[in-house]
Image 1 (tube, rainbow, N blue to C red):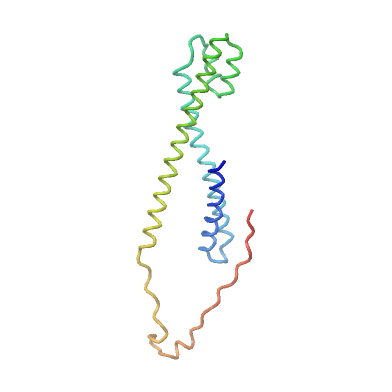
Image 2: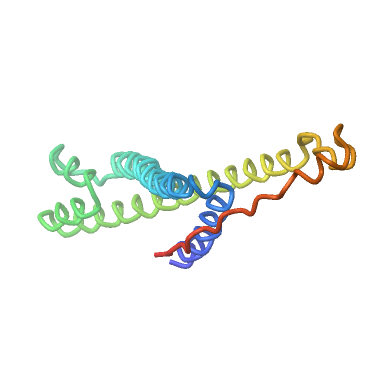
Length: 175
């Protein structure tokens, strides 16, 4: 829960950066894109880590399942942790205990592996973002515009140049 809470604080900063980089007339589209990206990233992460976890759980349980299980019982136990516990309830005591222990160990292993994969992916993403931000800051930008005094029309051109005030943005509401 603490990690999710930290992500919530970062989310507000990221949204602010995205909205401040967008022109005011495109703020709605930028906000929608930020929200859609966050939802898509969350769904993709759940799908990826869930698939990895399921594959690890099933392979661990298949490799270490106690002897004496029928193929139907093994398939039911491999489906979910709840399926393993339910299957164990109908087995003899020693086999049931062995199946429960194997299923709990397989579940713990899949959770550890999914956590490590998640940490590696987040670290890689952080390094990539830091690298991209560093190169974005060091790239040469366009030449600065000439001052009004250097303008080919001289002082008269400088008198015609007026700074346009930037329109104020409507206040944003945060959820």
